[in-house]
Length: 114
Image (cartoon, rainbow, N blue to C red; front, side):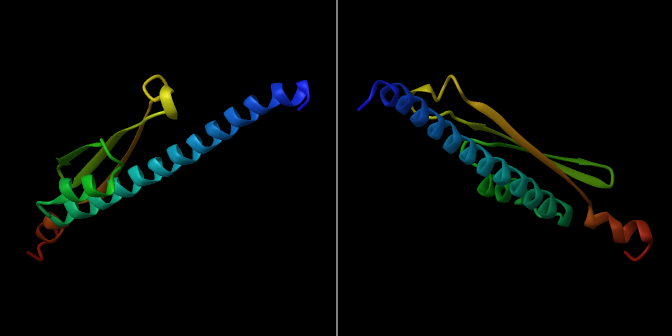
């Protein structure tokens, strides 16, 4: 093994670990978006289990907030994404997503279709 390889190899391993962590973080962000959409659709239908459905689709440790405002519902997801290895606590990033949907339980009432 040459000196150049001995210097470059740890840098390449570190780069590979950071890239893999980026892929894991991107996948967790996509799960946050999907969970927000699932929760918003359920809450718009008037489903009492909207929070639980969103929580089940969200990454582990995520916080789900469902709010109803007039004719819409909003679901916000906030989730931690820990860093790799022993640096997990130091490199944790917060991921989040939100989705808004029109409330279906009041649409028919507003149009007079009851």
